[in-house]
Image (cartoon, helix red, strand yellow):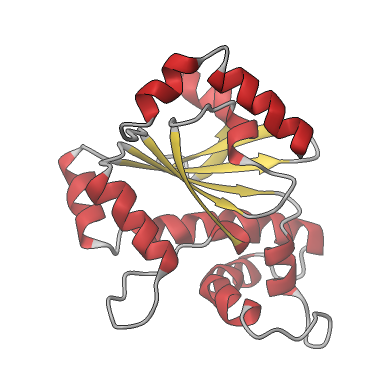
Length: 210
């Protein structure tokens, strides 16, 4: 990590001093990325993004809770609010991935996961996605159900984003777009959700069609 920091320091404070000379005055990212905290899927590495290009929120299973203003602590919602209302991002990407440990834990039968103080409650946000998958894929192999649940949880987070009034307002006005991406670790493919076809398509193919 120390070696990595030295590389970063040289790259951005020696060879690209203009970048941080500009960024120190403020950030203007165009995209909010909501991603899983899985150590194998780093949003900046996967997308090749540099400092200042993305505002990133990471949590277990890349989940977005529905809009629920109250006196509790809402870290994810607070970060979303800042990105949308203060930074005025133009795109929100919910990035999920294959072999997600959070989704695996959600799908585990009773007694197959470690007891937790916080994790089970957090993952309960994705239970509607799990129910949809089990109703649609009754008797299907577990691996197929897990991928379907990973993808469906992305769609659920996209739906929950639209419960925030200031997000819905911007989406309907055309100033903000919401995307669902799925990264397959086995193949290195990235998939983008096509709302018209209601399926995840390879990112390059989908963009070419668009």
